[in-house]
Amino acid sequence: MLQKCVHSSIVQVLESCATRIGVEFVVLEFVESDLSRVLSTGMEFNPLDVTRQLLRAIAHIHKCGVIHSNLEPSNVLLSETGKVKVCDFSHGQFFGNVVSSRTPIGALWYRAPELLFGVSYDWNIDAWSAGCIVYEMVFGEALFHGATTDNDVIRQICAYYFVAPEYSDWGALLSKTDTAQLCMTRNTRCEADVATILVDVVTTLLSIDPGRREVDLGSIPKKLR
Image (cartoon, rainbow, N blue to C red; front, side, top):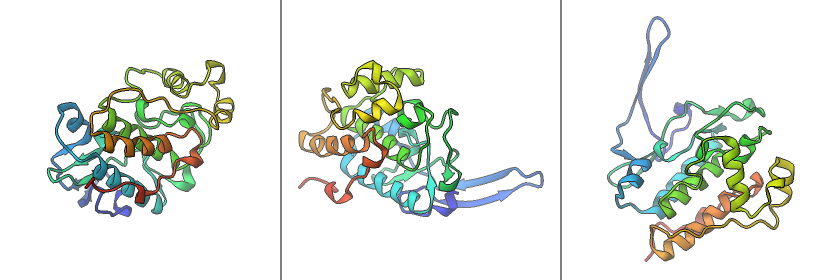
């Protein structure tokens, strides 16, 4: 699957081989760090450029007919020169193989609401995960930090969207998104002008309605002048 998704912002397969008993080994290119480590250590990076590269990588993955299904900061490798390399396709799925399921997919804090509710889903689950990652770059903390169960995340989603707990089923929650607004009141870790741009990106990517999660990459500059 990884070999199908060749892109400058996706980790490259250098070599692969299989043993006689069918165990497969894959050699990947070396990348110095990952976004989780960068965020936890306070290292400097360009959040606008990282967001652009990440979203371009996701768009290419989807163009190849693949859903990554496990996007989180530790799966966004980051080189010393600021190059993004998306990795870990172990949960990846081809579009035609997707079904609704209660089977956990991806890391809890980055799991789209349609997965939490066990309804049918598509490639837009990756957009939600990306929104959670960009949020973390802006605010320095995971949006759903501290949640340990699906229900914990669902309750937090209701709170962030000012939706009463009685709307915590998929159909009712989806019906409220025309009026719900994502609440983001924490202090940002990046410059105010950068945060303004990326908060708009986050708001789009974290739309409850999966069909509303498309971001215009042209709206994200590589850097501010």
